[in-house]
Image 1 (spheres, rainbow, N blue to C red):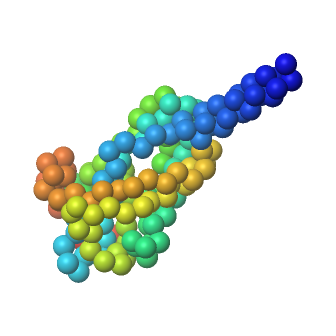
Image 2: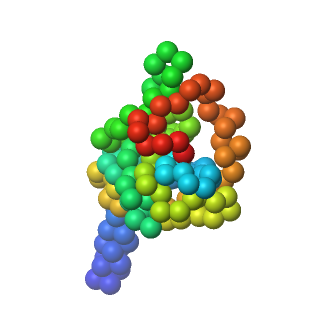
Length: 161
């Protein structure tokens, strides 16, 4: 009987840990390929939150870029401007999309061009769920351009991706 209760307790603890850390699922991660000499790139994904509200605080990919920021895109007249945000709120029970023309992860000072067909690791740092490591495939830019508004862009001194 003691063994059964101990096993039950271990199973309960494992499920509780999984529920706490597995509430955020990342779907459709992707980065657009960059032309030679580009100093910036962007990462997009859907954060599916099956649990309580959380926040994406930062992103890390040391082998890919010198720095990484969370950005949003704002329209000012016909000019699209990118601005840094301190965190991205992930509402409980909702999906938050980081996509072209909206919220996104900005890779600054790329160490080498992003080439279609390759992938790289990215670590997301969440306020409650902790660190979440994902693999980001690099796709052809044309496959993303269909979903982007066709306006001028201001990359706030980051150069063009």
